[in-house]
Length: 67
Image (cartoon, rainbow, N blue to C red):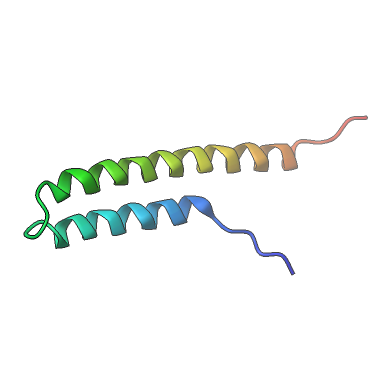
């Protein structure tokens, strides 16, 4: 049985964890919030791309096939 992974949710969870890590490390690493925000933005861009790809896939599945 093949399960589909929802990459949009995965990228959003990675974004949240990077922000939490930046907040947790702000007293030990200089500029950790800036780094965490930068990494988080990369994860958000990944979430947008995976969401667009999934929407295109669903649109093609619903479109009637004319041969």
